[in-house]
Length: 213
Length: 75
Image (tube, rainbow over all chains, first blue to last red):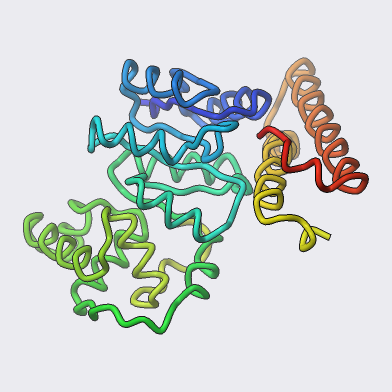
């Protein structure tokens, strides 16, 4: 079954272009909007597998839209989309609860794979952001992650869901959830993807090699 | 050059330039791929690239002529 997608992008030509390009990649773009208000209505009405939201929507913020969507429904799957590799913006974006963060410099096929990962319950941070995340590493001490927590964060960074991780490590889903909860608490992260970003930044995990994650 | 821009204008420029650039690279990738496309589709994609390139040209010209105005560009 094709992935059902709602696309919120204020740049009309890009919105129309993405609709065509992602359609060619096998996505079903069920709705598009150019403003935060229209976008929120559309996403709540159409309940897509994933929503792709531009970070800047004219004078409005895609991050604020994401926060509002997740306040209303914490299970909503949102991927933020941006032309900026500003790491502070990335951290704000992940704080909003978005499960994915993709850069506009990625190819349509990369974007489709990232959307599929998020739609399946996984997380995604564009691999081009990893050097910036790593260079932002501070001397501030955060509690160390256990070997098992690092292992799980590493698998989550590769786009695996909690259930996939449980299967891979031959653990129960509840055990994996507990490890993730503990890691999030140690890293002071609000969401799984935020925890993965912090774990990358702090050097606890290196993430998958190459750009196919 | 961009180092002289205020942070907000630089961020906005980075974001705004990516929109048409994403159109150029996305459709160019499809045109360059070894997949059959009808002439009408090929023309449509080329026209989208052309329009996006023109948008980039306008932005670059504006940057060179009056960087201060970029803070008012819409995304």
